[in-house]
Length: 58
Image (cartoon, rainbow, N blue to C red; front, side, top):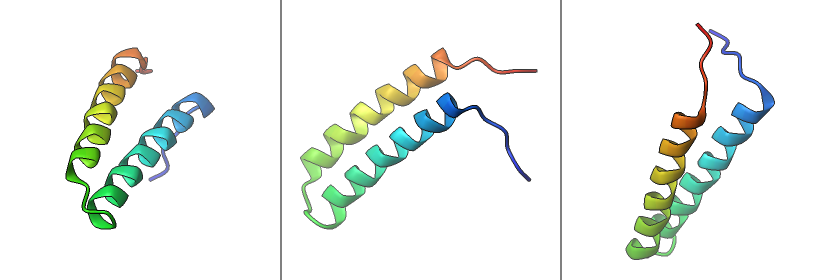
C-alpha cells in the first residue's frame, strides 16, 4: 500500500531516521550507551514535537 506525504513530512521522517541511525551507531559500533541515550532522548522530543505540529487530513 502506497502512502502519500508532502515533502515537509518526508523530510521530517528522514531527519528522525538519521537520528535513529546515529543512536544505533553509538550503541553497536562504539558501545557508548550514554551518547546513544542522549541521542534517543533528543529524538523522542523531536518526534513528539513533530507529531504535535503535524496536521492530518481526514
